[in-house]
Figure (cartoon, helix red, strand yellow):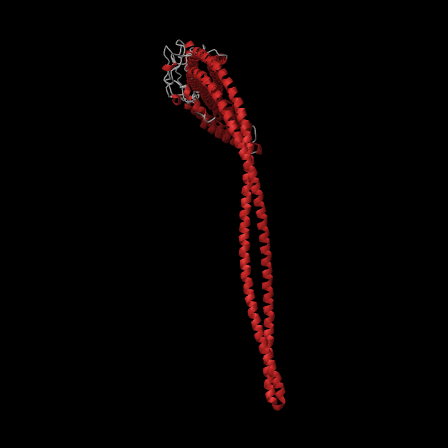
Length: 629
């Protein structure tokens, strides 16, 4: 039993479930097969009872009844008168029952199947044949109708015929008993089969129930207890206890326990690393389990960054120490330079005062020049206006001359018409002869006047055309003169604007120089303040140097990758992001010889570091470096 439980425990949950279902299916199949087999047996017995035994008994009983009716008909016929209707009726009953008994006996013979029955069948046939012969003999004896015949028939019927009839019926009784016995035996067999089937099904069902209960108990126990341990294990992990472990097995929960134990082992390893880090040992190597190991990556990144930060702090402490000394010396130099700068500022202030006076004079002169340019601009505008008026007058003259030319044209047309009329009048006077001479003289004079008028009109036309041409030339000259005056006006306007801008600039320059003077005064004050601040900075730098030494001493708590027994060296890894590492290449110039740091700082001589920083690259040390200020 214990071995079986152990075997079940070693199975996987999948195997346990498959075996449980297979056992249930096997018991179901066995129950079905047993039930089917038992039902088949019971059915065979029932078919034998209902299809063979009961019909056979029924045929025997009916055949026996028919034979009894034959016997009744036979004996009733003896006492009836031969030839009477009653006699004939008894005879009909006799024949009918005879045929029916024979038919039913034939049906039974068809159903008989056992050796006992088959052994009795020929005996019954022989006894029936013997009885039939005796019975027919009774009918023949009674057939003569005499009293002697009746007596002989009675004696035969009650004697030999009765003995043959009872012998025949005895076989029917034997066959009936045989069939009743076979029916009872079949019934008992069916009942026994039913009882056996019930018992077998109960046993199989009980075994199936026990097997199912066993597998259910073992399966549930093999799942629930490990799951309870897993839950307690998870709760311990949640509370931070990583000393716990799970018993391992071969099923799925056992495999899960193995995986969880590996998880705890990994946590222990990383916890040891974290413990070492908390003790200041940053030389730990963190190996990530996979690309999905978020905790391992975070721990690895933390170690990288802490190494980088501590290295940076160490270098920064060295830089601060050297830089503080440089700041102290530079503060002294700055104080002296501030004094010299103050005297130079006084000279600059005096020069700026003189420049301011000259600038104010320039501004006044520029204002007067601006006024003169404004007057010239006004005069040019007046000249332009006059030229425009003259141009308009000449245009009017040109238009009047054109109107006069039109009038002269009309006069010339009138003179031409008058000449034609005079010519017609001369022609008519010539036709009139003597009577027309006086009219011809008048017509001649009219022609003469018309010719003079035409000549005068032509002369006036030429004069007017000449005047129009002169006016046109004068208009063009006036327009050119007006354009020149406009150009002069524009240039005078620009000159006026420039002079005004010069005046405004001079005023602004004067104001700017005043502000410069004020700024120089403030610079003088600031310079004096810088001198005082430089002295304070010198004292602060000495304090800063002491703090840097204290920081280096505190950093000796950490041990980083690549360090030696005497101090830090550069890290031997390059895994941290480049943006997080100090750019030491910018400080590649050798540092000037200064007062060395304390020898026993736990970090080594700063001068031994391959990344030594020159403070002169960070803080301006020469007076020329302040020139841009």
